Amino acid sequence: MAKFPIARYRPERFPGLCLKINKNSHIAILLFRSGKMVCTGARSEEEAHRAVQEAVDKLREKGIVKATKAKVVIQNMVASASLGGDIDLEKATYCLGKVIYEPEQFPGAIYLMDKPRVVFLLFPNGKIVCTGAKVENDVYEAVNRLVGALEEDGLIFYRD
Image 1 (cartoon, one colour):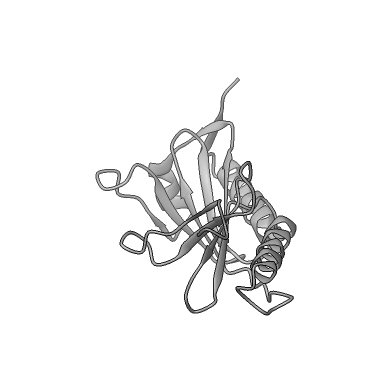
Image 2: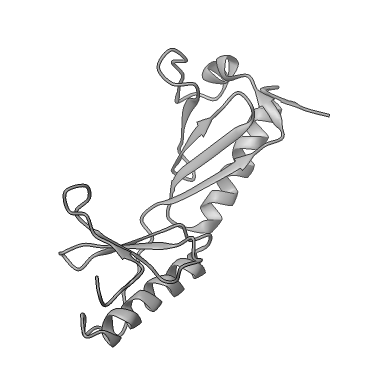
């Protein structure tokens, strides 16, 4: 940790080291003993690639790794948005298919979309979370398909 002033390591709480590239960055790199890294907080694929490479460069400069280039594989993208209207989750359960909605357990509905293969969390206030995409374009395609389905079935009520 002395080599990285912007790093946290508390193995009793989490098995990886959390490294910030710089103080003001919203991106964190999680480093594990296996040599694997996880990039969180990047707002695009390009930003994730750049942050991982920057972390590898810093680790190499400090003599911690010998690698010059990291092989980056996007496993899971998470995106959130507000649709600007209210969603009828009760009706969505029947219209969209593959929806789990148990308001006593969780305030949102879980919608499993087949194509692209992603999972949405839908909330009554129109906020959504999309997870599981491996490429950015899948997020945009999935959100557009979701909005289209919500509008087509009269499940979203836009606020003025």
